[in-house]
Length: 402
Image (cartoon, rainbow, N blue to C red; front, top):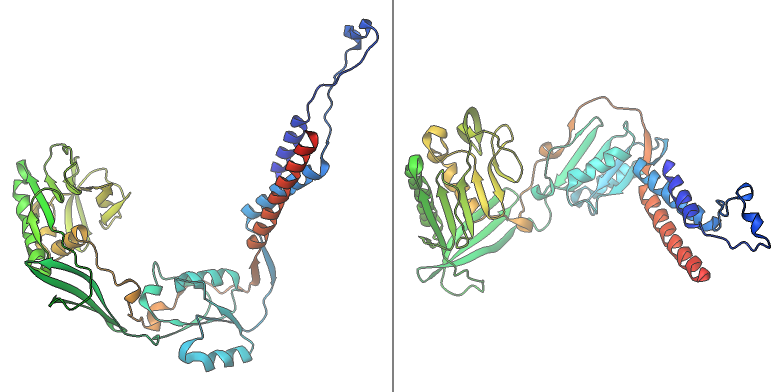
């Protein structure tokens, strides 16, 4: 809050102005009678007060204040929606003295739990009732010292069937459809007879491989993986310019204006490692790699494949001496996700997790705490009102002086 000195200093500085002194004798200007013609003073005390209050409100926001009170109630019941088949259980808990709280603004239920866990007293147990959709649980599993009972259920629309994409291949239209239910998602590729109203992708995937020097033999691994994708997916994949460039060479990358994406080897000194990358063993890497913009990472979190614009740099080599990536079943799948994109069910995903998979891990001691209410939303409103008031008063003062 020492920052409130800033508006005071600015206020006094802006008030500096000369004064005309009418004198009758020039002798009054002698050295002995000189005195300053400006003295600091506050001319707009209300405007200064509003500015000081605005700085104080911002300081309180940075401090993260909260209202603290003793714990009350037997526990919290956190519910998404109406609670599905657990409506009676929720009503009985509320009747027994539990507080009901909604999770309507939580896209990720684990994030909603973490927010509630920070606000509620430590000794109060939680009863969580949410749909068990897998897409609503992401990131790391939360950890809490409190007692948590988590009940999940399958939503009414437990089955989804949709067309993911369609493309033309040798005069035929191939369709990739998805079928998702609580136990998993199944993808089916079919040949359409022209009866389905779907948008058909008529583009052709093109690639060019340049392999030189010690890495001349690496071209066959890329070509074999793309051939397997061609056979498995039915996608039109052909060699030619305009698509992907695989630059398997120690020479610097040439201009790549004619290509949409580039896969190239990163330059540097190799180091011996013993780790895994995307499920495949890795025995050599290029020294000095980082995790920025990483697409593939090793077991240490280092970025083995990084993305910079349209250029993908591989900090290893597609060679059996550098690991078993090219011999593993993961290589065609990784290349498919890289060049054709990853298939994502999105909102169609109906997979449901077991409650044992979603309940937070219990760790630490239960603290006999107090209930906390976050005051930052209130302070944001006060700061906004003070800012608007300060602008209005500044305009008024300026117009009055002119």
